[in-house]
Length: 566
Ligand code: PEP
Ligand code: MG
Image (cartoon, rainbow, N blue to C red):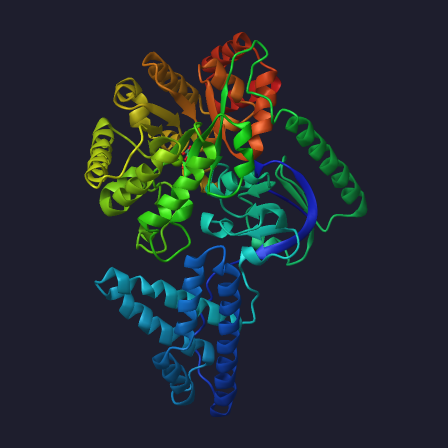
C-alpha cells in the first residue's frame, strides 16, 4: 500500500513502524456485577505497584541528566500513594460497583477539578501532576505500551498523529529513522526539529494512524513524500539503492562542512546555526560564524514549574562560553501557539496561528520576561550576546521591550552585577513590522527574518495545519518582495540582517536570498553543509540575476517551477 504526505526533511529509509499515540483514554461509565468487584480491586492494586516501579525507573534515569524532571516523577509517586485517593477508589469499586477504570478516572477527576479552581496558581498547577498520574494508571489498566520517545530501544520509523516540541525534546535522534505524522506543515516545529537532526520526515499524511500497524515494515521516501507499506523484495532492493545514493550525496555535501560560506566569486556569506537546546550540536560551532537563533523555549517546555533565573543563567552561560566571541543570538521566550507551558493555563492559545505569543506573552507575564532577561544579561559577560525579540509588530513593542530590558540593566547595575555590551534586535515575522522595516531598522541593532511565521501571517495560513497547506506558500511572491524590502532597510542603516526561518536553508531559495542582498543565513545543523555547497556554486552576479527574475513572477507555483528548472 502506498501513502503520501508532504516532504518536510529529505531522506530514504527502510524500517519498522513505531506508532506513537498518546491520545488520552477516557473510559466509559460502567458498573460491575458484585462478583467482579474483587478482581477490579486487585487489578487496581497491581497497576498501582506497576506505576510506582515505572516512575522509580524514570526518576533514576533522569537523576543525573535532569534533576528537576526527576523530582517531578518523585512527586508523581507520592500521588499514586495518596491516602484519600486510595480510600476512595476501592470504596467506589466495592460499594458503588464502579468499574476500576471508571473509578480511577472519576476519583482523579474530582481532585483535578477542585485543584484547577483554586486561585493559588501554585496549587492549581498541581492538577497537571494528577492528570499525568491518571493517564499513567489508565494506560497500565489498558495494558498499553509506555509512550515515551526517550525509551526507544531500536531505530524505528515513528508514526504519530502529531509531534510536539515536548515529545521530541527527549528522544534519541539515533533511534529515529524517520518521522511520519498526520498533522503538521513543513515549517511546523516538528518539521524543523526533524530537519535539524537530519531525520527524514513526511507530515500531513491523512488518516496515517488508521493505515499503519505497530511493527509493520515500511519504505519511506521522505524526499518525495511517499511511504510504501509492507514493501516487496524489489522495492526493498530499490530503496536500499536510493538510501545509499542519498547518503552518498549527503557525504559529498559534507565535504563543504569545514569550508567557509564563500561564493565562487569570493564573497563571504555568514553561516549561522539554529539551536533548540543547550547540549546537542555543540560540535558544530566550529563550522559556523554565529549562533543565528537560540530558541530558549526548550528550557520551559515539558515541565511543571518555570525555570529559575539561576537555572537559565547556567544554561545561557554555557552556550555563550561555547561560542566565544562569535555572535550568539539568544531569542527571548517565544511561548504560545504550538509551544505551550505545562505550568500555565494558556491552552486556549494552542493554535500556531495564535497571536498571544512571543513578546506579547512576555508583556502579559513581565515577571517571566524579566527573569529571563536578568539571566541572559548576567551571562552576557561570558560571550557575545545578541538579544532577539520575537513577534514584534510595531515600534511601540520595540520601545516597550527595550524599556523593560533597560530596567533590568539598571537593577543589575544597582546590585553590582556586571553586564557586558550586548545588542538588541528583533525577529521580522509579522507583516506590519516588515512593512515599516525602514523605521524599525533605526530603533534596533539587528534583525533576523523569521520566514516561517512571516509566511503564516502574510498568507493567513496556519503553519502547522496540513489542511491549510495550499494556502501556506513559502514561495509566495509576497515573501520575496518583503524580504527584499526588509533587507534593503537594514543594509541602508548599516545594521546586520539575517534570515533564520526555514527558507534560509532551502537550497532552491538560497541563491534568491543572496541575490536580494542577504549575507547572513542561519539554519539547522543538517543544512549547513548543503547550503555551503550551494553558495560555492554561485556568483553574486548570477544570484542577482536569479533574484530579479523571481521578483517578476506572479505565483508561488511559477516561482517553484522556475527554481526547479533554472
Ligand atoms: C520563524 O518564525 O521563522 C522562526 C525562525 O521562528 P520559529 O520557527 O521558532 O517560530
Ligand atoms: Mg517564529
